[in-house]
Image: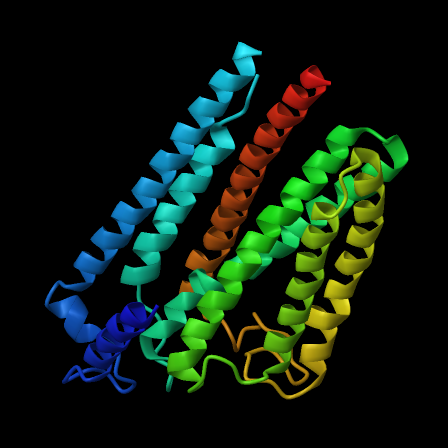
Length: 68
Length: 222
């Protein structure tokens, strides 16, 4: 939990300290240097993993149900 | 014949939420900055919880009328999955609050209201765990389910709106008005809500199927 909080605060700090950003300090730097896509990629991997697990569960349960 | 089409739509909507949620333009807001994107993740947790609890209470009432244990199994599964989403909602809310409101817990009326609701549903879980007799457990927990669902309305829907709150949409004004949610965000927010609710149902149906299998196995043993 602490590691996650540290990680998150680092990200937020980087986001908030980007230069030349618009009036409210948006994450334009992360978008302009392409790193936002890393975040998307990471989360997409996590989502894909979760859906793969769900499909695995579906198949397993279906097998148990038809075995009966 | 089992239906899968809605699960595929759920997956598509959630991937859309992820991509559009992180890459699309959001309005700049003081203090919130980019965290406003949490709207697509934190808020739907609660919408999903509510829908699942609603499904749970519908089946609870149905069980009381039919005395068919399957309805109780379905009711409990929806409730448990709803509890899961409420935990996610609370955790993500506290994480968001830590960096925008300055503290994970601020005794905000909505935080308090939802925490109370969660406690009542945890008690539902404990109540069921304490009773071994299937029918007694089903009847008592179904009645309890109705009461705690009814409590959601004042605790989350009414009380926080009447007082000053850190949450948007309180202190007299409902959220999601034109002032709270701009058009671009709505284009992601509404599909996100549908996607997350779909996921809630998917998880619930898996739990229901597992519980039904367990129940059938126990019946055979008896």
